Amino acid sequence: MTQASHAPMSPDRSSAELSAAYEAGLLREANRAYTDKRWAECGQLVQRVLAKRPQSVQAWRLAGALAFQAGRLAQAQAAFERVLALTQAEPADGEGHSSPDAPPAGAVAADDWFNLGSALDQPQRPELAGRAEQAYYRALALGSTQKDAVLRQLAALLRAQYRFQEARDLWQSELDVALACADAPSQARAYTALGAVALEEGRWPAAKPLVEAACAADPGYAESQFSRALGLLAEGDFEAGWLAHEWRWKVSQAQGCWRDYGPVWAGDGLGNRILLVWAEQGLGDAMQFARFLPPLRAAHPQAGLLLACRRGLHPVLAGMAARENITLLPAEEAVPGRVRGHDVHVPLLSLPLHLRCTLSRLPPPAPLSASLQSKALWNERMARFSLAPMPRSAKGVARGRAMRQLGLVWSGSDAQVMARRRNIRLADLEPLLSVRGVQWHSLQLGPAAAEIATSAWQGSIVDWSHHLADFGDTAGLMACLDGVVSVDTACVHLAASLGRPTWMLSRFDACWRWMAPREDSPWYPSLKIFNQEAPGDWEPVVRALGAHLNAAT
Image (cartoon, rainbow, N blue to C red):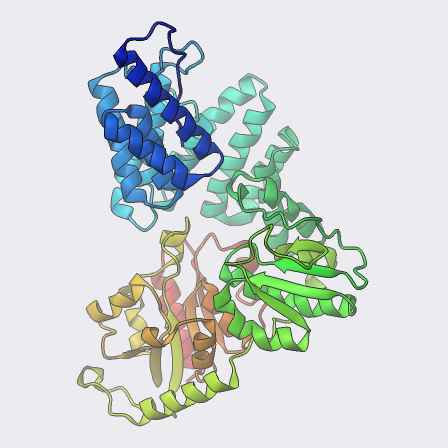
């Protein structure tokens, strides 16, 4: 986000100038508070400025930046639209853009358009994509000071809509200029961006030469080295891949994600020292990589082990933690500086590097489990359900336990960049209703669960969402099911870790861990993958899954 800039004040001040000086002082304090991440203080200062002068462009810029970093995107959008309205109505805003050190007025306006585009660019609001795209193009046309960031976000927006050629054209022109100027850092950025387009359009083999060219042009460019790491892991070259994977902490998206818990464990002998392991990424990643905790305990039997992870995971990790003598800490409270009692720490996804994991020596899935109480409760619920009369709209659906009981998840978080490519509309899964001998159970949470009421699935699937408060509840239900069908969400990791037959519908540009186009997984023996054959085309995938389930009747 672009923050406010400031001009020096004249020593000869009228009362109006004194007022302006006071406002400028508030804005300086607000900028410092923003830089120091003192968000509440910054917000209070901004409101004081706006109370005195509602036309303050700099205050509105900061208000937008504050709302954006807090995830209040509608407020950010409104603030940045206000900035543009004010600057277009009064090009000289009188707040410092005449300073010799300030960027040109056109570049400032360009960055305002970039800010607006960023606020509009919301995966869960595809109807705003057109406006976001227009804002990005306006920022480029006006000469944004953040050109690389604008290009990255615009290209990502185009790729999300499968407009690969337009995304490629954006970066190809940048590469041509960089090659002509022998600008190695710019070449690395362009090659990496072109590799991202190729990855989503043609998978890793198509992206590999571009990523390797980026690494050769600028070996210190973290984004290209991280892309190479994911490619190595997708190929199964774990030995080189885990080492290269450490570049993840230097990419721009990881800024602010590192947790400084003190000295970092380098993989050496722990003795009786206490190691804090912290889950660094999503819920699915935590479940997938929890498999390395038992080998860690075996390698360091005398060490103290702590695991900081989201509280919702604790119920399914509790059994393993008790057996391995690992203390679970809620990540929501494990703030650096407040966690005490450990000697060294390590991010969870660095464990395979330190344990020298190779594809042929991959540990089995973590022994996640539901509690005995949860299993008993869900057995009772399922027993009552299997004996209860079905709703009238479920005509023709048998209800005995002789039916296969299958869980279904069709959508993950809408906030993730790949959400539109990863998630499926429930209506697109209606062919599965014709699969013989199946009673479907919805494990779907969030807004997508409401799709049941507006689709042919209503009355043909049991919606358990109101009973699923955490992964312990979901695991208890899964333990009563005969299998789970899901897109690439945390539920895949949970079901497969529980050993349930799991069928995953995977987008064309699959995550590295699934090693596309494989249909099995070395990570999970009970997982079968149904891959898209073309970006965005789910119809053949759903048809293939239906045929497979029918054949297994």
